Image: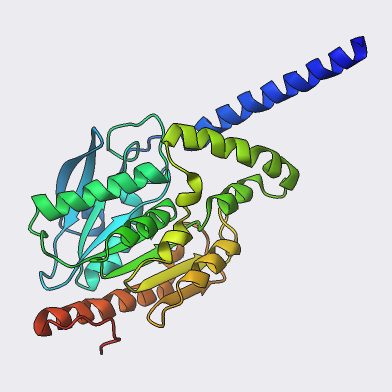
Length: 306
């Protein structure tokens, strides 16, 4: 009897330890380290206006880069523990193409106010509030809007665009497609550990965020997006495996959707490749022209216009 009680006690302690460990991991995964910006668009020879807006009780900072008034506004959404500065290389080549741009720091990122933890849910809330700001507080109230998101920002634009059919084109760059795939990537080859801990982590996150994680897989939302989609991924991505790219391309199947696989690309450097910059620019310009055609004729088209 003593052996049985001792064994049950050990099992109970292991279970309690696992619950405490996964609770700690759940918060640790969502905690962000604030990294203030050290550069502005001026460092890239881009004229800009600094703006502030509120998101869920926090004050966020952003930049507006004005350009050709006949071109769409592209909202650039940064990744986890990055900030608007990280999107400036994208701003540089998109400005050359004539686009107007809006970049901002999510809560707990860059120069925006800190947050205790972040998540895809909160990134999406911030994009909703950024969009509301440019629609109601700037001259872009009726302007056509496109989106480009990197990593967590790429996942964010999937959810946002599915809710906003007025968005005319979206670029998803180096993003994760599903939460289970993303967390498995973090555990690398530790399959048994993943199988043990993932359900408990999900349970903690669902209590924290008050959502069902299964309803927030980016690829599921991208499947409902109506506008043209561009998906880009690097073959040397250190964060996410090629399975994410395969999952995205499995749902972005419209003939107007485009995919770009860069075998030598890493997670954070796709913009360094001329093929990436040219492909993204051509994609967005193509549908900027399509939108201009719609404005001139009243007939909406996603056709590839010269």
